[in-house]
Length: 173
Image (cartoon, rainbow, N blue to C red; front, side, top):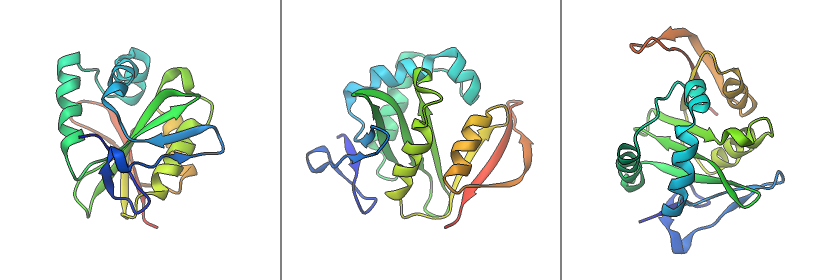
């Protein structure tokens, strides 16, 4: 069942969905099965994947992953729509005491403020705090998106097991 973020940060069935519009001509709405082709293309882009330090998945693995996260009642998902097209997604996942957020913006939409605005809209719908985020140290644009939305760096950069240096962020209020 596809779900969407509603005003109280609660997921409801798509027939109860509300979209969250923005002054930047983007909106957040329910992730629809039809969005997966665009999301797969975005996440398969080698430049985007390298910048995010998230390996691309084969289509069958991508579909299995998205089926799992879309069916998880503890995961909050939203599609970012810009100019009528899927421009990316936002996600919040994890246990209530340690929720993580993430986002992915189509490379064709970089540099337009869509990531900052989408995250702002997404955070308005999430009552959970603290929220955490992890960003590859070689992705300063993503760090700026988080900082514009009130996240602060936590500690020093860390080299993870896969060799990627990451920076941890947290939003407490």
